[in-house]
Length: 217
Image 1 (spheres, rainbow, N blue to C red):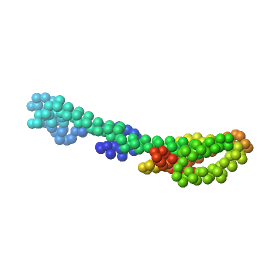
Image 2: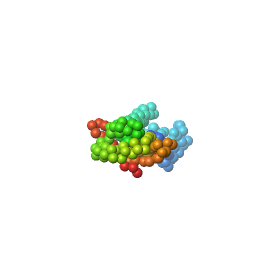
Image 3: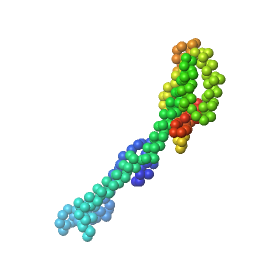
């Protein structure tokens, strides 16, 4: 089985168990064994391997074993390289982790703010945003978030429960983020926790991942 076949056969696992196949005895092998084990035979038959060694080629056991071991070691080395050292997979995994981290940190910054530290919180959130979404956020916070937070003495804190890449492209990604948002106001001092999920689009801008879309689902 080729490396490609191994990967297709086990898409969900990181490593595949190697399988060793045993060559079964055939009818011809049995006939050779019977002939070799007759009354005139100087020694008992040794099965498939014994018949091969008794041919005119007369290969000796030690060289054959060494050749097999060399071939097996070479195949094992190639398999381990393909499985354990895949530069393309390592790069993709690194990019995916960076995208998930940026989406998670940006989501927390967007959904966490307090009426007492509103300007500071909004400024911190802006550092995670880019493109048209940054312009939209500036307008939205000034028209709705700031007045509402000050009027109700609102404080909200977001916590990402889990996140995973939904799409991964060169220079961009879409991350599905599951978040719990805890909110208090002057009228409801006890925290109200609301779970939600968001599709967060992130784009690399000058080497930094920035949120360019933020769509609740």
